Length: 283
Ligand code: NDP
Picture (cartoon, helix red, strand yellow):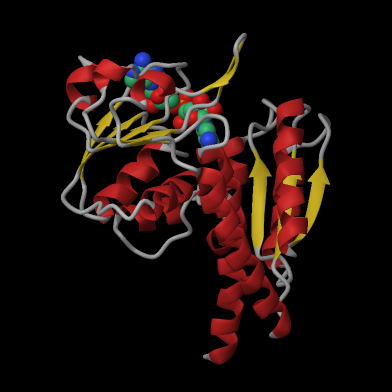
């Protein structure tokens, strides 16, 4: 069965809208700052999607669009200003950034408490040791999808294909923290199928169109396809959904799948951070 991610997102949007209204009533106006430092059209599209969702949910947003003359120091100065601004709850640097900029230095200069993307080593470290952390948006969205199915995670065998900092590693940690037995596969894994065949929960984030075929999936598995690949046939995932649908219990579609929950999770992070300012006032 194809998971109806749109319905999950619609429900979550309503609840988030109400949370924003509640915060507004208490004098808190959640606000996101976005830094765009590249000329790529796809990045502009991603930023505009984020802007639209902010508008829809009543979250304030401001953007810093920088050109090729910008230095690492310039970006870090903007971030320092945003770190100190108590009206800003989340800071996001849209990746990729211009090649001459030092990505590591820039991302690490974001205050961990405002790191809505959850990429800061402090947040990744907290996730690793099972402490409360700002969780990166795609893995957070994946957990929401799995939880919405009403299936237990504890005790299940989970296989994650891909070990990136933004998807593979954090989702492996989240599944592990919830009691799954997790195997992480990557490009050096020998006989991928031997592993994927064992998965009750299979998460695929490789950027390889239709890498996962029906013969690689266990009957009744939950399959989460993170991949977004632009091909001559349009956008496809890392999973051969049509064939896998017949074997798996659930599979996410591409497009209209994990990507939808990713943007929503970003806004959830902004709202969660904004709510913390009330906890501080209560102390
Ligand atoms: P990366 O390129 O950073 O990582 C890809 C991972 O896949 C690597 O760990 C790589 O292994 C592994 N891999 C590559 N080829 C194979 C293979 N043949 N067999 C097994 N493992 C393989 O990608 P991202 O994690 O950033 O993104 C993955 C995909 O997810 C992309 O299509 C991206 O567009 C999409 N994406 C979608 C999002 C959404 O919201 N839906 C959000 C973020 C990403 P190794 O480490 O050994 O190189």
